[in-house]
Length: 116
Image (tube, rainbow, N blue to C red):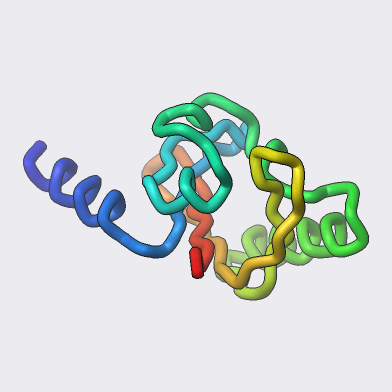
């Protein structure tokens, strides 16, 4: 599984903030840039629901989520400004993109935020 370690090292060293969720919206992976961007300690987000990270109630939240899901459900990546929630509750809008990662029998979603 050397290739898996290489991939993890690449993701962990990226300046872009990255996280991966499953179909149940459970957070499976976050890189250090994502944790720093949102104010979380290493590993603290794992297993949480991704709704914790998004401003779904704000004026841009719900339309953004619907746009993302529409694009992903059509097999296309989504790009745009994403309202995200910092650990302290403040909302920041960051540019980023979201795409499906498809494996036999499973689909994951990859979120990439430009961390600054």
